[in-house]
Image (cartoon, rainbow, N blue to C red; front, side, top):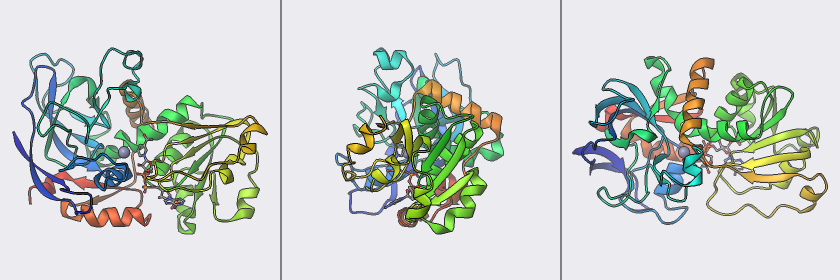
Length: 349
Ligand code: NAP
Ligand code: ZN
């Protein structure tokens, strides 16, 4: 099946209109008409080969929402017309310890929604900047939000789960002081989710202009991280800090804010390493530095249901397909409140 898509032919080329092939709907597959797809900073890292190993043409997009168009003969959980989502994972081995625990995100054979190995043409997966996708039912999520909110649900499929999973794992909740570093696509979801979980939330931003907006998202306090005095006021006070920043920066400035046994978890994935942190920031207070990658399928469903129950969606700015390149430039400048979402109907025109 030929469908229209938007992607790049090389790391130094802009994205443009393409035609791609989707596989026939197999017995366990769900064929989805994609309505909207969020633009994650990972799309930009990957399409420009900043993490290396990108294969071209590259069609990014792993914040996919739409309606089921058709299902394979053995699919029982979904039917045509259902509202569904697909996140960052479209396959995994299905039988390792990680898959058995519902942590497909940590399976060594996890296949990403784009640039992952597949038997389908052209040999690597092609993502959600496209009209349709065909995905094994195991990796399809159910959306319980009202249909009018569908576009704003799209970013939950990556930005939502990538922040929800570590907040849960490190027990964000009542009585906990939680920092969220970077008020971008991931960070704004981190603030909303940590607030809904009942934590005392402090947002860290480099942008003075995001102060008021971060409060509206649910932050109890906002710190402009360039201001040393504001930072010093929070020394040794955090249980947990979630760091979403997409660029290398000084981690010591944040590690010093953790109290004894506190943890800072990195989810931002810059193309080049952070400067090495000072070992004394770990040994003096038994602090930890950790990482976390998206989340497994069961936890992604749990996050979507939590958001539906609490009325949580992303703050989005809708763009046409032919505005994607401009949106990337604006995302690099931090000029988005807080996630661009593509209206996939515009792939037609
Ligand atoms: P984004 O919307 O561009 O947000 C990143 C934010 O980081 C910016 O809005 C900005 O916030 C802050 N920032 C950017 N450059 C900075 C700098 N030089 N110094 C300090 N702060 C800076 O990106 P995103 O989509 O949220 O993604 C963030 C990162 O997470 C990317 O690297 C992405 O690849 C990665 N990611 C990881 C996972 C995972 O599973 N671990 C999943 C998805 C994405 P302020 O203006 O508030 O400072
Ligand atoms: Zn992403």
